[in-house]
Length: 336
Image (cartoon, rainbow, N blue to C red; front, side, top):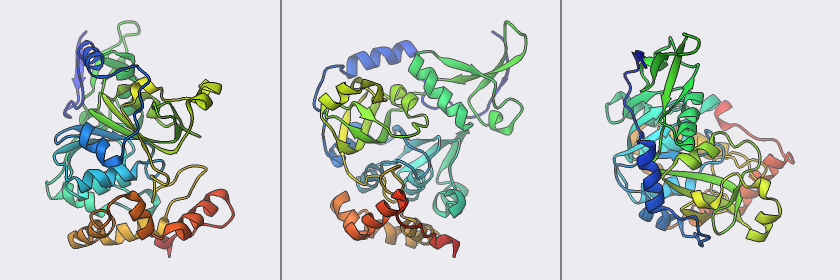
């Protein structure tokens, strides 16, 4: 197959599919094993310096903030992050010095709240390398190729754009139509963490609402840590198997943590903590503000339960639940 054009971005997370299949056989099990562990144990056991990681959810929605804080608390370094739709999670990890290389589709901004001063400053100062770029759909299809066990997947995206030029994709001639087609290489993150609404002790997981690309990501990742709002019995899982979007055999650890997405949203459970996000955006404009934030909310607490108390405890959480249910209107401090 003749390659017509190649992107100049770094190829991140690719493995020969047969080698990856063998790695999975050697390192994972399909047995029903109780996988419940704490957040600190999960990070110590499955994530190490230099790994490639991906975070589930979308932007500020359904993110595993408890694991993000634990990575910072354990001071991991030289991580590469796949910024498929990574916003608050990536911003924190870059700001804390844990992530110093990224491949991005959608990052470095907090959506309508404004840009990400901390992580943008690191890139501008050369302390974080944007090694490759890709589109949102392109990232999902990279994970899909890995899920399918194939080296690449063809798609009609990115051709003729600067995004293609900065990606690791290749352009070839379709042998049937003779037209140009983009080949997106498979991507196997070393570790991914995905926050779900409910899961059993084995890792069978349910997500209410859109799954974004978490189905593909869960199957593509070599190690998968599930964080869940609620632990449910396996008999309940078996009664409605169609609701299981992530099966147990993909999962390496289950961390039970209610409100784990805070200050992000958990659809149907609680709304964004806009006050807290605004505080982060204000403090992160300066390096000493980042240090102040981390000292209070990450290093100044023993675990996520203590963090939830520091950010307002049950009164704040009740407010966020009421906003999500429509019982009270949201407030937007950044819009004042």
